[in-house]
Image 1 (cartoon, helix red, strand yellow):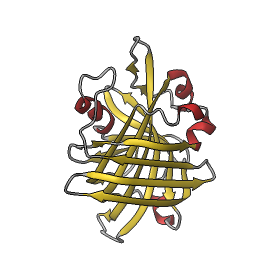
Image 2 (cartoon, rainbow, N blue to C red):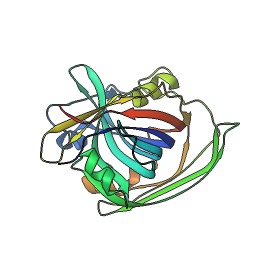
Image 3 (tube, rainbow, N blue to C red):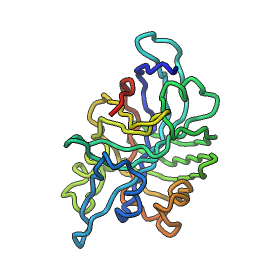
Amino acid sequence: MPSFDSYTTVAENVLIVTHAVPIQRIRPEVPEALELDAIKGPEGEDFALVSTRFFLNRDLRWSPSGEESLDFHQCFSETYVRSNEETGVYVLACFLERETPLVFERLAMKNAYAADFDVSLAYDPTERAYQHYYTELLSSKGDTAIEVSSAGHEPSARTPFESGQEMSRYITDRHILYFAMIGGGLGAMRLEFGEMNPIEGDLLSGEFGYWEDLGVLREEEFEKPYSVLLQPAIEVIVHAPEMN
């Protein structure tokens, strides 16, 4: 039986590329127990947001044992949900860098897949700017490749939000992660982290094979994101999974 330990990690170079899609494309993929946290489009229509979230786990340590210090790349394909008035994200797929079997076991996620990652970036901490950021993921569930840059500017507002800060909080201020558990059932992990302060990125090119294969995104929509956000680093405590 897997050990459902908590862990702490520093998520570095967090890249969140988000697209707005018609609700009917994503609703069948989300458990009925969860409500989609939809937004209104410019003409009052309802949209769901779906995100591809890349990051590097730095110095991941299991608690309470403190065993191992792991560095590995990870990617979530996720959408935004509510449950009993609490907001969270539902992870449709979790991609983990190969050669991390212990992580696969302890996360207890049914939809966790091994992937090969190729990442290169140039970051200027003085300006909080990325001259370039390229990340590629190859897996049995589709390939993803994203290239972005960022001048370090604050996020811009998107409909229906009145400010970029409000929009970025909607995307980043989510402290419950829902997922399908190994063996059945809906799992939930609570996350602790400080308020994120992301910068805005420009999508230079994008391929989103997982979302395309699922029928959620179409190729002509790849390079028309709702938003691109980058967070250079944030410390996260991830509590042990629970049945929801």
